[in-house]
Length: 294
Image (tube, rainbow, N blue to C red; front, side, top):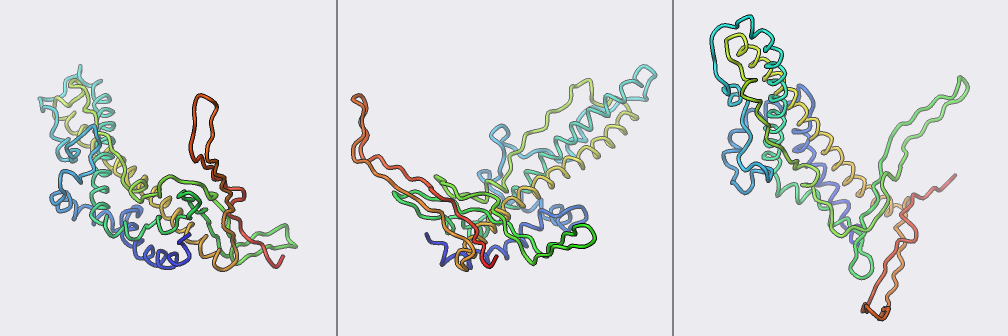
């Protein structure tokens, strides 16, 4: 395995990456909103067609809020017969706005993340953490999560405290390829489906409802995109840091490496099929945490 010499370096690089990824994964009120709004035009304009991150079903970037607000035709004043249409126009705009806001913001986040692709590839070097196994196979290290300053009161006469606790969230497992940060942070998006022609606004009042509902739906869709990115970023951070944490625990004697057995059979056959050099590699005992001192 190669993790012994690389886990400290990988962990240090990861700390630097948090400042980039966290800017995108922030919640409401975070500077990411201003960052995205101010930098979106430059990022999208400078991106080449091959790196725009569009889904296979849609080659062009999704439309902006201003663009979808212009869809439909304006008309005269609302008539009594058209009053019932307002609810349908509102719902159509909410749905369309949500889909469009989700697609546009996801696409934009992809562009900003890809702008830091080279740096993120250096930081999230899962390959340096993979465990070498017989016959060229690779094992993905376990993911270890940690909690600190634990406190639990039992009735009024007993308190349990702990400075730190480790837990194996995911066990070591064979993996044909190493994980990639793109799998976590680059998300597909689906082009919003325009409402039926009859659901577009036809007059001033419907136009007002249309615009307000589009804006509301767009905001909810954008929030959903930020939330999805935040969740995926957390998964990436938890996986990478958890594997680095395992290698550090192994070095300090608080965790073990998985035990592997390999068997090679030169020739295996049944009269119909013959297999040459058939190898089997099995994990007989997974990586474990070491409890010492009672």
